[in-house]
Length: 456
Figure 1 (spheres, helix red, strand yellow):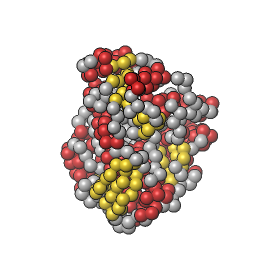
Figure 2 (spheres, helix red, strand yellow):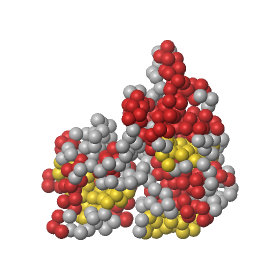
Figure 3 (cartoon, one colour):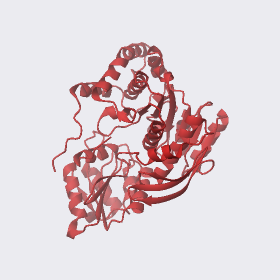
Figure 4 (cartoon, one colour):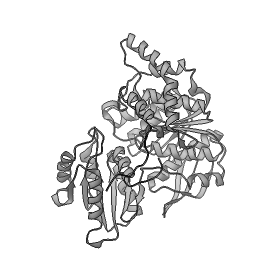
């Protein structure tokens, strides 16, 4: 199965991205906002020229950002959106009016920041500190691109944590926190309370807080305590706001939502899964908070138009029929649990085959354990990421988890993994087998590309 071309990056973008990658990696936090604050100050603080919604959490951030941005755009605002990581091109991380900037725009944003970044790098080095990190530089690029557009509002997803995340240079009008779980423990802490404390760092006195339901009560306790300390307004899922009714359907689900300011009956959301209904709820509440201070309901027709057309690539996304192939960026146990529930609710496969590849810093054993009851067989492979667990190593782990060697197939080649999964799903003429791809964002992206899925 030869790879299909999805998007060829320009040589200029490749060069710029390589330069960014030579900085401290994305999955590393430097617990100090002085460098990003200094570079923004030198640039004239472009992030202050528009309103901002900041989103933190362990799972659901990107989709919540995409839904909120779609609502605000339908309401007539010019929008900026920054999310991470990307699927196919780093330019996806900076979107204006719902569209990723082009290669030239990404290169221009890099060059706009460069002279100021060099000053900050030099100042930091003189003080014995590190240069701007990869994510700090990208954040500066996004905020500068939004100011240049210009946008009315920026929807900003935190990269990692909250308190020390580079997006903290923005002073948000609304702060959203999605469900919190164990992830990135090496940076955020090894307990739910510590991780929640880091996420709670995005809350401010003046920002209206929109808090998603938490599986772990300790996480909500930390968030409530922070809101109380700040004296901030807060809308909490299953208290002031909630998904009142939900009916799964073809290509999405019908929802009744209670927002901060209004109740929205039977609006269609073009995304699958209970978790996406919750993401939509948080986005609706954030839009109410931003557009009317939480006191004015959204226009019903506008909301319906937005929710019925929203997309979230790589999130429980059907990228192929016959056999039905679902791609999901689930890269931690909580994400895997959500994926399993979504597949069981929306698909009636007679045989389910997994394609799984996981990165080294993730809890591979627990991810596999969550997926095991769903899968009749699993094809273990690896993405092209240098952080990917080698296929043979992951396969050994999978054999222990699945407790049956016949259920585990191993190949280091992703195209071969896809073909093997197709053969297994369709064996003995089975017309109702399905394939579920999970384990990492890079795996999701590469399978999408190989299968020719469109859009970012």
